[in-house]
Image 1 (cartoon, helix red, strand yellow):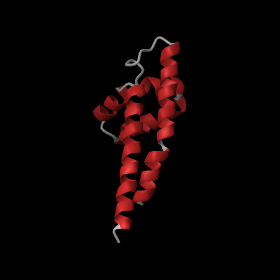
Image 2: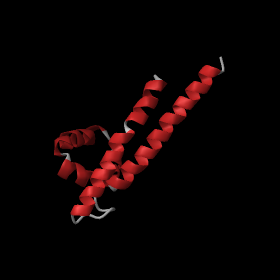
Image 3: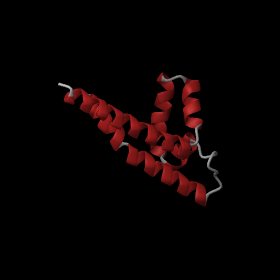
Image 4: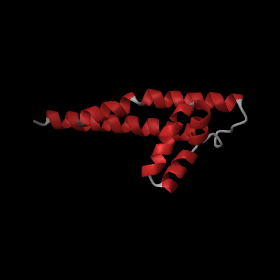
Length: 103
């Protein structure tokens, strides 16, 4: 199970990096700045089909926490997520490899 989580963390990184580049493209052609293009603005304007998911998340998640996450600038958020998830996936794989080699 941990191996699956590790690979999921690593395999999701290209999607996150593509969202970073998409956000940079939007900032370069519009009036948004690096810090003004929030997750919610990006989802509302570019991925509108996800709005029902956002509404559903408000029913079971803490509203202040979700407001905070959706207000983070998408370029910075996705860049940090890509770095952390890749590192976390590689770290899990190295721990699993070390555990398997010790037997």
